[in-house]
Amino acid sequence: MVGKAKNEGVKDNSNYLRGTIKEGLADQITGAISEDDQILTKFHGMYQQDDRDIRADRRKKFLDKAYSFMIRVRLPGGTCTPEQWLKMDYISDNYANHTIKITTRQTFQFHGVIKNNLRDSLQEMNKVCLDTIAACGDVNRTVMCNPNPHESAHHSVVLKLARDISNHLLPKTAAYHEIWLDDELLEGGEEKAEKDFKGAEEEPIYGKHYLPRKFKTVIAVPPVNDVDIFAHCLGFIAITEGDKVIGYNVTVGGGMGMTHGDTTTFPRTADLMGFCTVEQAVDVAEKVVIAQRDLGNRDERKWARLKYTVEKLGIAKFREEVENRLGYKLQAPKPFKFESTGDRYGWIKGSDNKWHCTLFIQNGRVKDTKNFPMKTGLREIAKIHKGEYRLTNNQNIIISSVDEKDKPQIEKLLKEYKLDTFNQSGLRKNSMACVALPTCGLALAESERYLPDLVSELEQEFEKNGLREEPVVIRMTGCPNGCARPYLAEIGLVGTNPGKYNLYLGAAFDGSRLNKLFKKDIEGVKVRETLSPVIADYAKNKASGEHFGDFVIRKNYVKATTAGNNFHA
Ligand code: HEM
Ligand code: SF4
Image 1: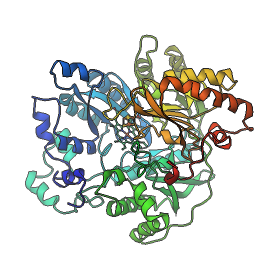
Image 2: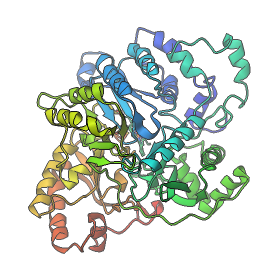
Image 3: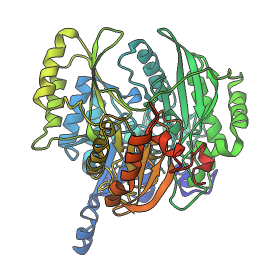
Image 4: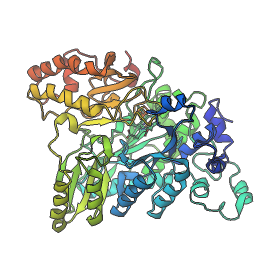
């Protein structure tokens, strides 16, 4: 055992992520699995949850919780085919709660999958070459990249890197195939597996304890910072010359999660570490992971992310640790400039002469309602679409690579199903909420079910002041873990108690600066009246081109947060 945190022992004893998951699935007495196996199934891409809307009622009736699972797909670069889309649609209807969630990390999630449907869901996914390996857990998770519809040449380079890094850093254990795809223990059963999995040989990168905590990697193409590079453990900023990507600036040590009331935990923006060539990028990713494997805190999970390792060592020392493992030096970072974190909606023609259409999907939730059969519409499009899909890092969908001649047919369906909702306000276009209630076991307050209404209220304030089109980034989460990156929002709301939120202001529009606490623990219904005078002041006194996040600092509503370690100051 290498550390004191409970999870370290569970990983240690798991026989490379097998644990007793197979036995747990066979147990028909309960819809749950054991606590230790819940830690392990995260590495296989799923979380045990229960329906919190009906928890109290079931308790009264002496019933067990309504257990089900959330399944997250590994989708490096967020790209999929129409066939894969149709499979997602099928899985959501047949095994999940009839909805698909497009996540803030450019992939699909399903909610409400009962234990007996887990295997079938993953087997259906496997039929279209998708998996959920390492989508959660203490490993490198799905790698995000800029979907960049208009600069197609850059997109293909960064997409390849996203896939290469994701594949290179996958756990090597055969546990996923054995448990979910009914493969026999590979090549000759347990004896062979025992032998092969002795020591670190079978997990050459991770070793048998994997990483101290989750690990997140992204690739950005300036000037768009839609991946929120500074929120992630490891980032690559593409440096381009014309059509060519000449290399990447490497960032390390970003992260969002913290605990309310514990100032030893804080969100942190990543540091620039250096520059590497295109050919070196996968190697650099591996060595950063290995440095974190060796140096990360395994005693306390709340300090176990790479951000705390970098904070403790300092960027110069951490860079030295990475370079020692690389056997060569990184170059000095090259100049770059980010302008925004949001998506650009509607149709655009790429440098490949194909058309790409970004759709606005409120909080990434794809579902049918009586007045808005969005999911059906997307299914009808998938039946005729010959290109691909790109999920964005802001929970939206790009119908991508459409030939000129096929465009009218897709436009017709977009109109028919009311999917051509490009005329949203600047606030709504830049809004994002995590899932929270009823599925997330960590939620302290509503998020996805509440933000649309709050945005409607705030829209009135912006509209009243002639600012309907003004792009302002607003994000909400149901707890401080920060799954929708709320600390990088110009208006951030983080749940503290049912109906109550901490209100943060003052992040940079380009995602480079964290926000600061403005009002603690206020009721959701008070947010509008709290922000009303600030919005009016902004309308009256903003400098030309000045973003809301910069304005509230200039006017002293909040102090600027210049680094994670002064987020609480
Ligand atoms: C201590 C930190 C964190 C914990 C314990 C945690 C846990 C969870 C849980 C339980 C869910 C499932 C909610 C559901 O689907 O019902 C979730 C969703 C998600 N988390 Fe986290 N999370 C943490 C931090 C983060 C951060 C910092 C990010 C991103 C930078 C992130 C990205 C996501 C994404 C993309 C989803 C999918 C749903 C969505 O798009 O809102 N998580 N997380
Ligand atoms: S931020 Fe909190 S409430 Fe929202 S999905 Fe993440 S863990 Fe759940």
